[in-house]
Image (cartoon, rainbow, N blue to C red; front, side, top):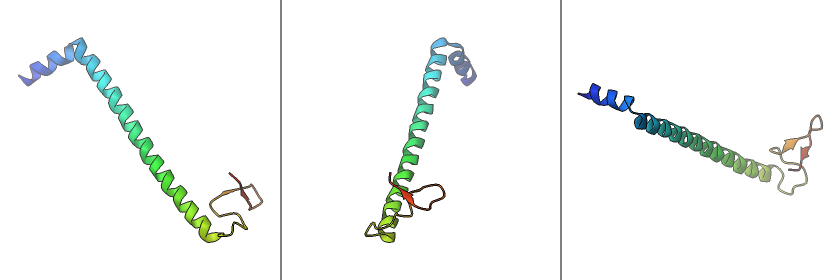
Amino acid sequence: MIDEVLATLAGSAWARTALRYGVTALAILLFLLALRRSGERAGRLAGLCAVLQRRVSPGMDRPGRCGIVAAGTGEGVAR
């Protein structure tokens, strides 16, 4: 009985179309969740960078260690 139902659904055009849209929606959902997770991770790292920068150079008299370093100079570059 289950085999017959599955065969009927797999054979119908509307079921294949619904399955195609469902798989596409699932792929988009998983992509957005992964994007959100990477954004949260980047936000946490930026917060940690700001805290470390305040601890290392509270007077901002020298560049923080989390900034972008210019090639070969060792000095931070303003973002």
